[in-house]
Image (tube, rainbow, N blue to C red; front, side):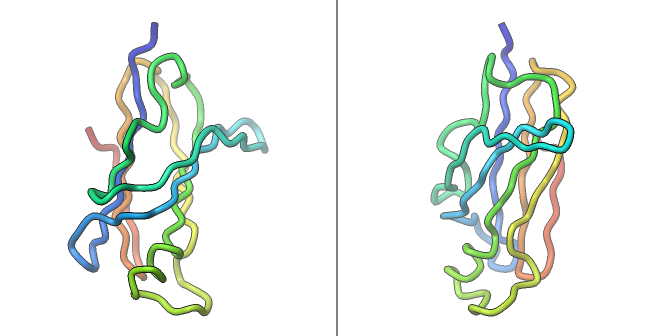
Length: 119
């Protein structure tokens, strides 16, 4: 039985605190297609209340997390109603080992973002 899991969190580097209320959608990527797996919203700590995937649901393959950063930036007063430099932020990554823990965080500001494989 697979014991791996996929987790994420979002930090607002411009404000120096967790980003609460960010909608995140997870897709399974296959060839040219995307299949929606799950969707959630970050809590007050900028984290999801549960792993995005865990156990047998996490399988080897390609995935994409899409963070609705623009909605968060508008709600937090860091962006107006016009066209944003950053809106939806997709992060595509691979899962070569379904028994491992993959933590894919997002650090955002109105004009930059970064990610890494965390623990």
